[in-house]
Amino acid sequence: MENAPTTSGDSQVFAQLRKLGLRPTSARVCVLQVLNEHVHESLPAERIFLLLIEIGISVSLGTIYRVLNELEQRGMVHKEWYALDPAGKSRYVLASAVVAPIACQLLCPSCGRSHSVTDKLFLEALQRQARAGGSDQGLASAVISIPCNQCASAAPTPAAQTPGTAPA
Image 1 (cartoon, rainbow, N blue to C red):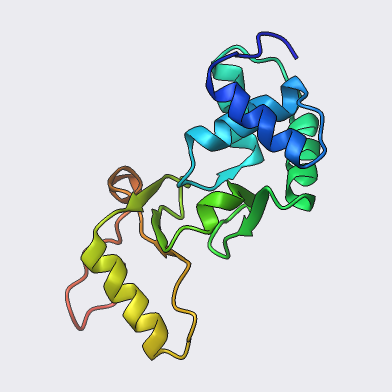
Image 2: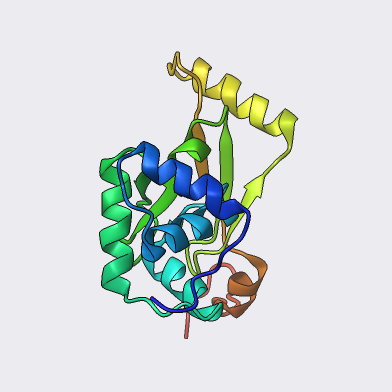
């Protein structure tokens, strides 16, 4: 791996890896840095790969998957799967981000763009609804599928039809 960044955040990443008994290789450090930069967002391995390529880090997609699997086995990363993801790809998020009181994301089912919801009143209402629905532990995270404006405007619209007439 070439051009691995070195910042003050590296020392935190190094400490996390050493605590787990893992050597802080450049691949592990770079993957963790990307996940730390997107702490409230779950990312597919391919997106992590592209983010590293964008900043000039040379790494294979296979290495990304290997590192993510190692970190998942050690409990540092959580693997998530979204039923609405058309590609059926797993997404990864730092374990510390999952432990947060509640996280809610709006996820576009077409392009995968996500946005973290930060409205406390909305999150509290979701928490109440989860408890009312029989989840005594409340709500740790939620994903709401909603098309983004770009995908919604690009989607073909059905032809206008007058009520009571058959389509042409």
